[in-house]
Image (cartoon, rainbow, N blue to C red; front, side, top):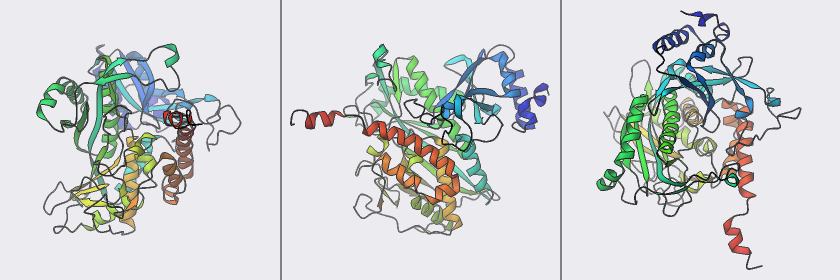
Length: 482
């Protein structure tokens, strides 16, 4: 092994022997110069990749000592505004993150991917730590790993499959004028690649196949287990589905997929968006459906396979009941934007209440569980596709595990999910979700006060900017009347 074992990360125990061996191997494998630059990145609180690009020859130093990045990257809202007082004596956080000082990015060599659309470049995912090496309680990837380990301690593992909806539009106006470079920048001008509301229509797929194929080939080149490419409900709306994997793998995969789609499309003068409900005429809402099965790690048995028809297993009862009990509190983790709450409407293939049903796409949780079927699972349809996958998956593990631990039982399944009495309503606004999240004793116990206060502050900043903005509705309603 090279001198990596003598580096600061190894000495601090932040890279173990297996990681160091993998780092040595990738440095040797790419010593031919085929990779010239490495994008050293991490998933921020919004599920956006941030980081720096290094020449390949500098990569060994990252495995030895990590990489410094400004701590304010973890303190920003979606407009890239820093919402914590970093220039005051008290940032409101337990740890010192004042003065825009540095974080320590610790690389994970298993995430190294050559980028097929930028073949001289590669990704390397990192996890942010305090400069001391201590784990940051709101860092996304470690938070999910901790949840996965807690479930593993009970002899169980979660397997997840992804259904991801998004749109790809032709980009007509990139909005690059100086006055359009605001915080956030102005929305680009677009038009559809094809008309819509012909769900799964073959001729629509054929028209979109050039884009579908390019995204599919890049998925496969990155090692993402893409399963299907589908024409979704609305104009220019796509859905990609992915074979099952463990939560940490699929959280990384979701980060790669969203970023790849946006980068590849941008190079083709296209605009890929995972926004929940684009404010475009006739546009359909995007949802993220998460399939979940629970596995006995000793036997490999699918614990959600029911013993008899229409009778959930004990594990399925507890898991579903836990997800239902904590759905409101977890909405800030599954539906993190102002826009996402405008998807929760009746009769739109999206949930508006907290309940479960058997093979019912109107219910929040759709159960697909049959005796003898090793693929028995549930599908949670609550999330929007902007969600930070690490936070989202952690919320499912912690909620489901709570239901298992307490021996909760799911209520009777609903047959008519849009009836007014079919279940508790989901929050109707980001503000409502923030308030439930802040007041959740469960999340404060499971994730800690610092995490809850941190994320609530960031999302409240976004809510304040939203509701203080004078809207077109207000102008039309009052400007002439009064």
